[in-house]
Length: 432
Length: 96
Image (cartoon, rainbow over all chains, first blue to last red; front, top):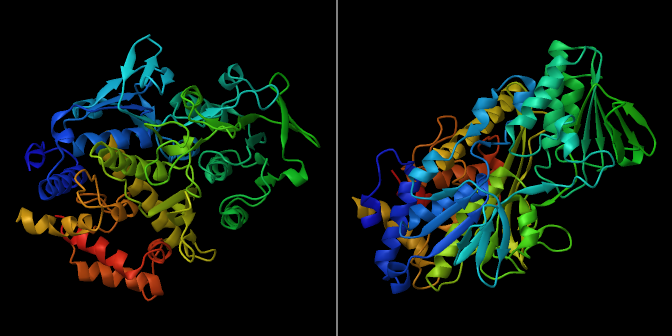
């Protein structure tokens, strides 16, 4: 009960209760000496929804743990809802979070980049040259954008043609400025990669949010989505909403119609597919992705570029004592979403504590609930319930699905409220 | 007070491997807690913490059969059986 009595009054109450539940369990079942006596070290690489939630859960459950969070950014821009910044209906500042409260919770926050990991020596090397030793390493670094995939689109090009697909607020601000300053009647082109990629409905939410702005402010403009996929998440819901809200504004070009992007010519402002050339006023290239490069350096990524994990413990199938959560992991049918990353962070923390105690991690059922904004006060969602089957998270049959096609505006408005509420709840639990 | 509050959590943990000493949260609750925190939370999302377990069970079953209209909970409730719903409801009822 000692842990519970140490709570500061301002500490998020969810943590407080989780911690006291753990404390009671410890009292009830006699903690093993290993937990009580040694100072176990967990290093977490990546301070987004997955890594930061894992850090907080670990530290709340066992204040004796030495938890180090490695994150190069001092300000994290939360990607969920950031497409509404492009529409001008949310401020960028509302997406931005610092790490002060995380540090105040007793987590060592190191603002540096992890440049190597040695699974044998159990160390992580930082770009400063410092080495951190760990008993367990959690990799939650998110994605790397593949700047070798589309001819003409390398890292330098992103300063002119934003991807706005990482936790970098400057990229979102750049895209917003370009849309604001373009002339009425111009073409906005969004290119979308093949799966797997971060936030499957995200590109279509983005198209919707930009269309929302164009319809109001630059009504003669058009938007084209040049897609490497033949179908997409919540397709019928998006397309029916576009027809109703933005008739004639959004065109979706699938690969069978020539949607696979071959190259971009930034000097001439053209995007080329095998069939067509698009002359754009503003382009947003969302490149193909893989797990962030530290996962490769740690030997946790496989030939697909992603990290296979045990779905119960999130431990890498390739490296002992290394766990991978969030977008970098191959977690079966679980989508690469912030919602999933938060839950994986909590579960991974639970598994690590059990492993330290010499116990087996416990399988869980998970939900994922992704909202996409289509207009102001108008959101749709895709929901799933998952459980581990034969080593992969598999959707529970008969559960989950998408919002109804024929719902009234009040239903869409309610989903938009839920999207906001999820964001506030989770960002305050993690960063507050 | 503390004892009654935490008793169901212990029951849930008791179903786990003997000697479980390190849980962050009962794994079933991981499915719920992203939107329904153990206490506090956002006014836009119905609060479960401290609600009688019979109410939570009744609501989940009504969501599952379609007897109660919903925006997302009908889709989620279908993924949980009676025993899972009872365990989740027990845990939330014990929170303040």
